[in-house]
View 1 (cartoon, rainbow, N blue to C red):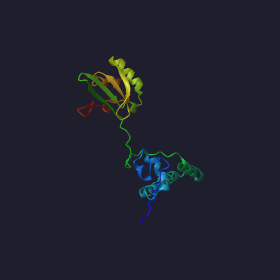
View 2 (view 1 turned 45 degrees about the vertical axis):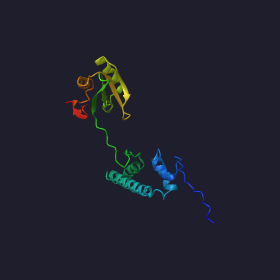
View 3 (view 1 turned 45 degrees about the horizontal axis):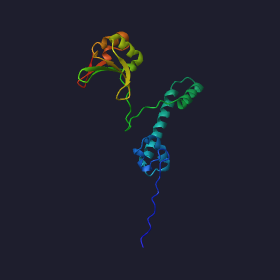
View 4 (view 1 turned 30 degrees about the vertical axis):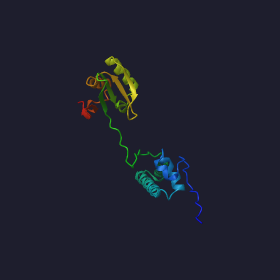
Length: 201
């Protein structure tokens, strides 16, 4: 007589609720990783390697911080205080993208793009003013008053805020930006023409 089939026991993730072998395809794999390391190490052996590498990097960073702050030679007690401060101080976490790539700091540049809608209507898009410490709401009001047109702050396709100004003011806007905000140099202003970035200066 044939053996009676036994039900399959499925291990569900305690964080996302998916079966453990499908966590990597779930909404937040990063949050699941500690739970998976502890409860399902055989499913994801790479996570264990990654955890040991992170711990080794962390220890090396702490050793470097201790070595750098210890070189001051300011006296025994004072230098030991800086050692403790360096080891316990808030660490700056580096923003990493999927695949372990480090996110680059954004260049300070203003990008101006002209978008034509409905064959005749034109919108000038200004991106990157916030990188120079300019409030976008104030900038949109000033642009609207200067060029007597509608200007608003909207979220762009990359979820970054940008200013949409009605009308084709792309070449007039450069002089206005450099005069109104002197900390925006003309060399940092670029146009997008035919899909290529062209310097305004």
